[in-house]
Length: 84
Image 1: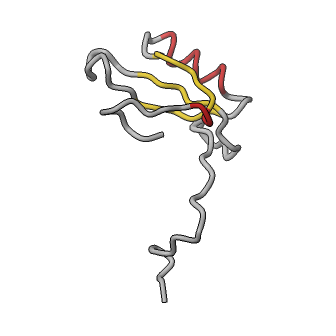
Image 2: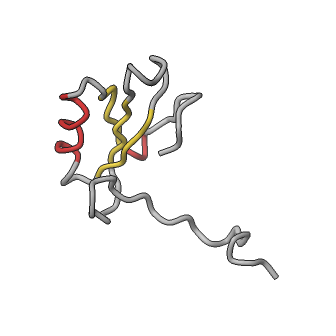
């Protein structure tokens, strides 16, 4: 008998928005990096629902961190980046 941690038939929870307090389904991946901390090819990710996409994009953009905004179902993780 499989334990809950090893049951391969249990689907992973759906990704949720990274905005504080939001539990809506993620639709967007916001790829970013902090050039003072990360190599240029490194991408960290935040997830966003439709409602918070612009707010989170602006937060990262004002700081010069935002590199790309891609639909979650189209996101391809660059090698060496963290998982969304």
